[in-house]
Figure 1 (tube, rainbow, N blue to C red):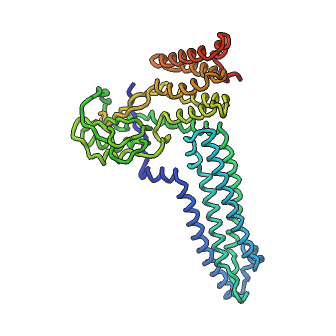
Figure 2 (tube, rainbow, N blue to C red; figure 1 turned 90 degrees about the vertical axis):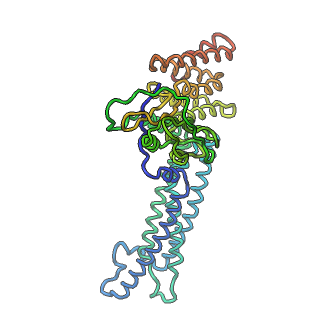
Figure 3 (cartoon, rainbow, N blue to C red; figure 1 turned 45 degrees about the horizontal axis):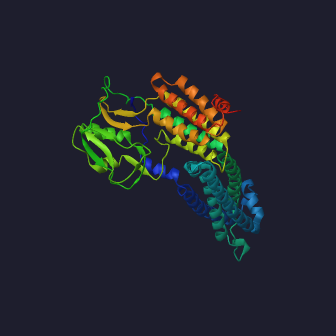
Length: 447
């Protein structure tokens, strides 16, 4: 079934924003830069206050309530700042250790595909950035606030010590939030919920209406055209992560072309494999077409409809491995998979026809079909969990619900999976009685 889709614009510099989101460098380096700049500004401020206090004898600045703490510290201010610096270095080591343990646990027990959740965690990046900022800030203060030979010439860290204490309090609060967030991410149910919510948001977004303001009724979907010229992939190999639909539609509309995107989002592109089939006119420059594609090292949920199901199926498969043997986690994964399949059951799938302002089809994109999504969601879980009554009963309940909710033209693939489930269970079960029990639909498996 064809569909007419226009994806939401990702705005300017999408690649830069995506790299920032997937990188652990930008936010921590920003914290380091902020710590250095703040220390420079604070030293200048305290020096100005010291000079002003020496000239302005009518009022003792140390009597002001917001400067009294630092003034009372006197020579011990340097010791306090040094203690803060040492403590922050210890905190940085703790955060780094916890992060490594969380990443190792997620890769070993969940799936390597979910490691991106930890890398993209804003709490982790912000916590590390504040710790680095506080550490560099207090380290710089130690260097600048060296006791002078004459005690009267020594600069009292009025603002420096007060701001350092504020950074320490903020760091402690963020450390608690970070531990809470990391513990949640180490629980498989929260990871599956996060993956499910991302996928549901993408499913809703992929059903956007045609471009606003187009005149008249859209033209009929063009029949498949085996002709045209091919554009080969000549850039570096990698996974097709996203397509700038608006850019390709504008390019095709300008030249009166129809672009057929041959690979599907999530496919690994090998150099010199077919990328586009161009019909209706001369082929645009290869660089103009390839620049509209985001190529990366792994699949993402940016536009990949099937990736959420892939991650949930991986978690279930890992839970059903002999080393883990956790069918309950597999059942919980099936719960989220059924949510996604239910949302996709009435979505147009197979091909997306993206239209220009005039209503003519300008870009044809291949999407996963309904049978392919069912195969992805259930095949591996059924094969690995056929020996678990809990899993087979949950799959049977899922198929019952999907057969009722799916349109009539999509019920045949559901029945095919029911036949495959019955065949697998009857082959693996030692007796007809146990096979019949394993095929009874149960949304909780066996509770």
